[in-house]
Image 1: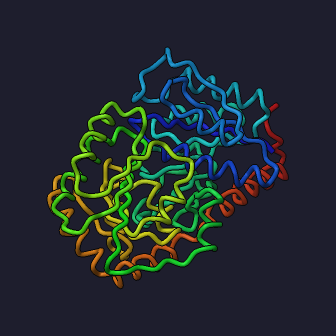
Image 2: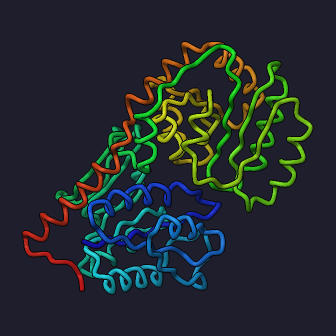
Image 3: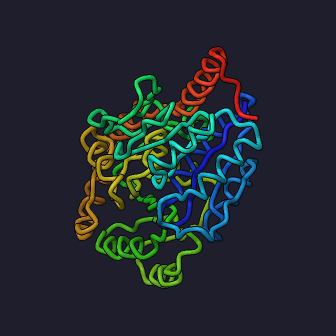
Length: 358
């Protein structure tokens, strides 16, 4: 059984789309499915993350559009052609740039269309299957066909296998003298905001141990490193890492964006201060605060960060409660559930006479 994943992961859109597709791809591969990724041929599209994970990647020429434009007809034609060439039963699209027309044209090729979405702001009537793994989904209504399969909620969060494994092998303990702070704002250009956060934390009296995950291609990274040397805290700048589990298990508190990283932190029981960096992250940040596993911080209120950090570090029982809530909501098994759903969809359609595209 073969699937094609259409996603991208360059700085202006972050790594979330690629990372959750990698998690789902790993779960499907474990079930003996063949997975091909289709990505745009940009130098900073993090294709190497996918190839290092052992997946085949087919690149689409970047000469037909700019990075932040909607996916073009050319993109759709190439994606469909690749899917037909490899014998895919389904094309899974995780890209906000995939318009209604784009998805309908894919569907017209006789291949099943699956969509991973966060916003419910598009007509997805061409989709056979939709996944929204976010908590704030009860108010969202999809424009979808009556027979479309819809998976909604945090039980379907797509995490890589190492998160579930680490979760089962550790117990979190919090104390009022904790000092370990993780700052991770996603795969985009976040060095400047990270610098502003560190500047704000200078007023925290206790000496903090801070680890910052920052994209190595960020042109503000040098300035950030220079700033770190002047801090009274112990700060380490870490570039792109393949071992986020290690950094999260180390941390007593995380300051992070409101994207896919939240689910990883919840699975491992890390309390969070969440900063929404894009429109699709605001509802997540609000929901996480409402359920009690995070504190929300608006970018314009960074000056309040030191007070929040000092309070949360002192109140170790609060962090213990936040940790327990997060772990209870994200168990690390979501990718397995989603993989089984996709396989079941294909199996059911094959029984009805659909046999893939060859």
